[in-house]
Image 1 (cartoon, helix red, strand yellow):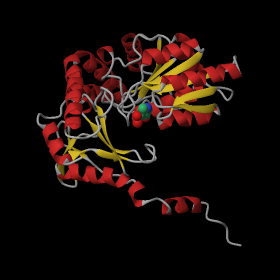
Image 2: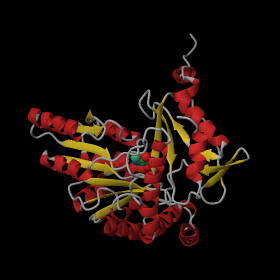
Image 3: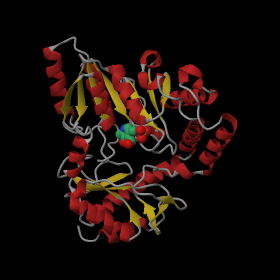
Image 4: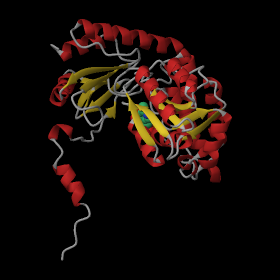
Amino acid sequence: MEAADPLAPLAADLAALAPERRRRLRSLQPAGQAAFVAEGSPLLDLASNDYLGLSRDPALQRAATEAIQSEGVGAGASRLISGTRPLHGTLERALGAWLGRERVLLYPSGFQANIAAVQALADRHTWVLADRLIHHSLLVGIQATGAKLRRFQHNDLSDLEAQLQRARRDAPQRRLLVLSESLFSMEGSSPDVAALAELCRGHGAALLLDEAHALGVLGEGGRGLGYGIQDISLISGTFGKAFGSGGAFLAGNATVGDWLLQHSGPFRYSTALAPPLVAAAAAGLTAIQEREPERLALLQRAQRWRDALEAAGWPRPCGSGPILPLLVGDDHRALALQQQLEQAGLLSVAIRPPTVPVGTARLRLVLRHDCPAGTLDRLIEALGEP
Ligand SMILES: Cc1ncc(COP(=O)(O)O)c(C=O)c1O
């Protein structure tokens, strides 16, 4: 008998994938600030999460280059072996001071940090109450712990409260964990973080807040929407978005920080964040603090874009940050809009299921502070009739 092909399930899965759901990798060549060249054509960047344009900022480039020259490219080992350099500790302390948290630990990526955060706050006996639209990495974290997952409606604190009450009534001693984000990357929306934290405190539930998209952009001085709220068990942040670098961190109190150091597999068993990325993230932190006017201008401009899109007949993108998704529903229509924009020299990406729920495909428009004047008019014209 011929042995079965172990990869046959993968081939069957790929064969069943509808063409409009198929992803392809595309190379984009950076071309000056806020622009790329793709297949020979220039495209203005309305797709990246580089909200403050820091990834190509000379100060960050200089910091990364100097770190390569003095420390080398890679750290060569995990943090607890021989991978910790003075610049890791310096950045952790600077972030802790900026965010008002006792302890910060760096992670190689936000995806890894989120898995680590869920593992710290939940075990297989825990009930995790998660916003229906949380990031995939948090779901992977829940799977890794074996905790029981319950979903609440997006940003709906009444639904969360009802579920917390039920969870407490059934088992008063049960460990509870609530998961949310301060700026949802595909929605542009934010929860009322103070009310969320208060609700968790009242029910003895831990709260993990993913601030990946808010940091550098929302909250006092760009410190995120969790800033100043102590009833948050862990904050997760990434350097891959407004910080303009790569890598990530978790911030919390001394107890949770020490627990992560002693037990967190994604921290202990992964090579330390590469020195040039650490140095660039530190320069990004300085830049965010120095460029408050740019941050405020970005937020004002994002509101003007919302007003103009609504006035042009599009559903008003929700929230107040730089992520402005145009909800169109149908996958084909979202892809057609993406192509329409590209023909006008604008890069924005159609987001389709399974990244978002079926029937909610959208064009994810992202505003960056260095978009040239006149971009909004170009955009409205390229979008055409709603
Ligand atoms: C909400 C959210 N959390 C976490 C991550 C992961 O961060 P990183 O890119 O550093 O792995 C992302 C990035 O896609 C994200 O959007």
